[in-house]
Image 1: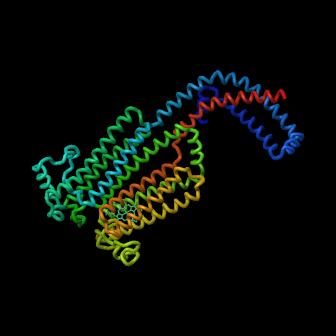
Image 2: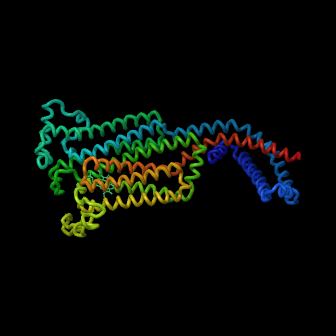
Image 3: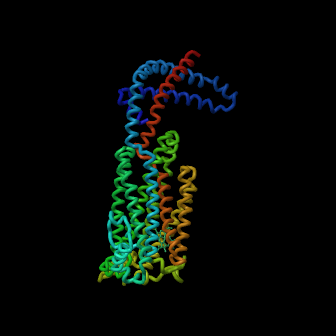
Amino acid sequence: MLLLKTLLRESNTFNVSSRLFARNSVFNKSFTKLTTSGSSCKTPVGIRNYSMTPLFKEKSSQLKREMMILGSKWKSNSRQFSSFKPLLNESTSKITEEMANSVKTSNTVAYWLIGTSGLVFGIVVLGGLTRLTESGLSITEWKPVTGSLPPIGQKEWEEEFLKYKESPEFQQLNSHINLDEFKFIFFMEWIHRLWGRAIGVVFIAPAIYFAVSKRSSPHVNKRLLGLTSLLGLQGFLGWWMVKSGLDQEQLDARKSKPTVSQYRLTTHLGAAFCLYIGMLWTGLDILKENKWMKNPDQATKLFQKLNNPTLGPMRKIALTLLAFCFVTAMSGGMVAGLDAGMIYNTWPKMGVTWFPSGRELMDPNFARREDKKDIWWRNLLENPTTVQLVHRTFATAAFCGVFAVHMYALKKKLVLPRNAQMSVHALMGVVTLQATLGILTILWVVPTPLASLHQAGSLALVTAAVIFANQVRKPRGNVKTLINSGFAQQLLKKTTNSGSKIMTEASKLATK
Ligand code: HEM
């Protein structure tokens, strides 16, 4: 409607046409008035009696008069209307096309983005496996290009092993391993790095192609640029993390055995989650918007549903849930980074009590400042006992949060779009599975397959939360306008058709 009005204003015809619309609604109003007062008489006899009343006679002759005036005015207006209609048609389709070009992105881009997010899912799980098999510190250099090839031949392998022998990990933890065992941990890390490079190629080359060939809209291009930067940063973060486990000075400062810093591990994990969420969200957005544009009728109905004020809080809740799942996953990263799953292998209690003692949770030994002012945050982020309790707390809150939202969604079933209902059920299922996996990981003292499944579960949970938040979101302003413009042409037709109908009705009534 908005678009149509703009178009009409543009072709200097707004006055004529808006009057046409206004008259149409005057006609509709008076007709409804007459019929609704008549419809209060439910039986045929009642209707006949009603039609005999002076009120009906007065109303119907008033309507006839209105219709005659309307009919004659319509006649002259419709002549003017038909003269500008081709112009209007032309500018409608031109503007619609221009707008479509600036908004629409090909479905191929969406499939590619979702596919690449699958590769990110895979690399996160592989990264977890690399950490769990303690393979992450086996490659002691960062060679983004030349490192793509593994050592070839005995000599090169020996050289590589020699470099590893100089690392703190070999000297303090792995001095017993032989070349074959080294080859295993090397390949774990090498595949992880190669997968990262592959994601870079699979993402960046098509992104450039889609942007240049205008298969992606400027809006999507901005996101692709953001994701490309995040991908580059991710590679750097990977090396920055590994460095913290290779550098003896840093290990001394942390008073740690040769492992990577939990802060850096969580930053690397967090960036991977952001990349995954960004790719998935953008892909889902494109598919959703294209579906709407293909079927504007259905889209308009959905927009009406999404405009329901009851869904306002649901939108905020969905985003909060997503943020909460993310934070819970990051607290899990801290547990993994500190190997904090190796202690307190009981659930729901931690040991024989519900909570460890205050002294253990806020151990002054973790404070590094003289005045011990950093005792709080150091314990929250560096004390394995406290870090595990934090993860348990976040996980419990995330589970309860999803449960509450699930209940709320069931209550608001009638206003919630069907797809969103399905995704909130999925969210409930995944969070239950994820909490169960977490509990089993604790109880069975972090066996590699279970810990890896638990990590994959956290991505599955984030996926369900992204889908849910994406489905309750309102459409972007210009997408909405574009979809409405799909009606512009139909509206033009309808205007002419309803004009002729009014004329016929008016002349029929006038001759009666
Ligand atoms: C319900 C939401 C939960 C989410 C989203 C979540 C997420 C995560 C993530 C992302 C990791 C890091 C995995 C890695 O980098 O290898 C992790 C680790 C861990 N989580 Fe959870 N978790 C949840 C619930 C739980 C629960 C209920 C428990 C047990 C009480 C638990 C226990 C653990 C343990 C022990 C680890 C360390 C495993 C390792 O060392 O690899 N988690 N969690």
